[in-house]
Image 1 (tube, rainbow, N blue to C red):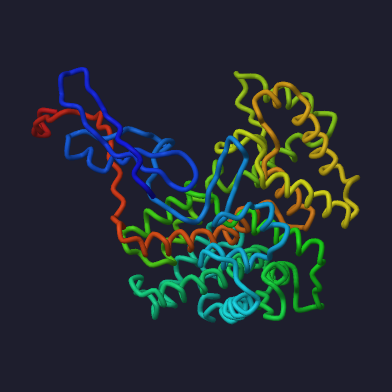
Image 2 (image 1 turned 180 degrees about the vertical axis):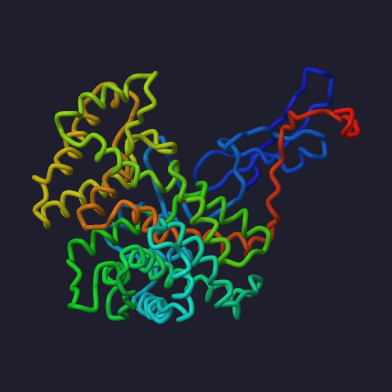
Length: 431
């Protein structure tokens, strides 16, 4: 972070101008350092923080105009093609890709922490059987603070590392058990001889009745889903983790808060909403009807899975998932399945129709990842839970970076107050 020059704010009411330093990072837009504005009796107003940098970070870079996504400087395309999720998680946490020895040690550490405290099974049983898996995950992840409080000193780097490893290891178990609890099936314990993706699939789909062998094509596809969703800069859930963490809260509470934020349909619920939309359309013959509705400004219907708030070009993750999607459909022989034919026809129209092309409403990662997970037999209700276990890697990296930052301050956004001015209270008989 280097200082460039100064920006000057002038006022038309005769007030003295204010000079503010400008800062430049290694990539991306320059920023105006407004930290001293409060001393001058003014603040900025930026609903949704669309133009506000709330932190400095070394982890993830996005250029929405060019369709770029880098983890620690590495293009997402290279990581998805050549790395597994453990390597990417190590990269996010430590800043560099591991060598063979570091990778094995890190993998062994995570595998050795996948089991949950036995009493945590009682917390699952406190929920209704039909509770949404995300509701269960928010509660169970938050409760980890009551079971693993031996490393709660967030000022200690070793304690932070242990907490990070525990979260990365245990969230997949919690997510899979949330699904099993829904079904009324026995919890399946993790198998340390399986890799991260295979282990989750085992806990999701295996039963005590017979041996489960993960399909390698599906396992690879699932690994890519995890890598593509591992981090995405300062989005709503990551900002939530950072804001909660700025108060000194436990990492388990921070990640639980991130899961709650991710659950929103405008955030992590988008891939679940995409499949719900496809089910609503129902048949290829009805696509025209829904395309017409999507173009109608007076219709509340939205075409889910197309366009992105950040990417003004093709989502780089979508390109990878599109290839993965076809690999999975080929492996399972599902290209003739009505739902997948519907999805592929909708994709074709969106890529060719002038209305969508001119507005750059390309299919995004949620469109393809939802199709892939449905093909794998994962129900819609688990889509966001899987998003959460993938994003845990990024959340804990962001949390650890924030806690280690010498400039850390508790988050305290300002407001533009539009309520009543001062008024005096009247006795109840006069109101």
